[in-house]
Amino acid sequence: MRLYKRYVDMIVLTNKEGQLKPLYLIWEGANGKENFKIDKILDIRKSSSKVGGCGILYECYIDGKVRKLFYEKDRWFIESYRP
Image (cartoon, rainbow, N blue to C red; front, side, top):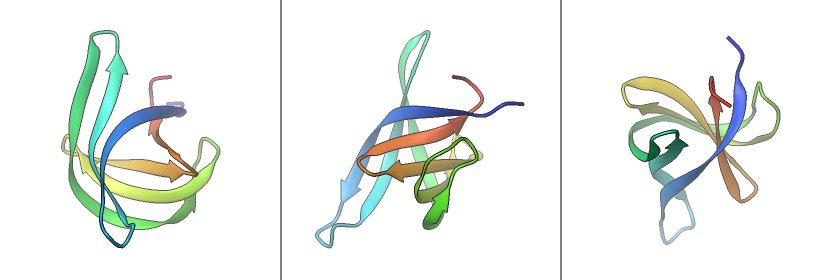
């Protein structure tokens, strides 16, 4: 299956040290917007994406699945099977 780079809206906590903690991913689909809670952050590291681009990789459990969420400069994207 082909992966796509999908920019998404996020709800993020920024602590007093400036560290980012993603809380919710906001997905815009055919049925409107859906919020998905970030259940658990498994790993945070600098990385490049298979779909192009690089930044800080947040490997997370979202809706029971491991997903790769990237913070690139000042935007968030996810590797998605839907464009």
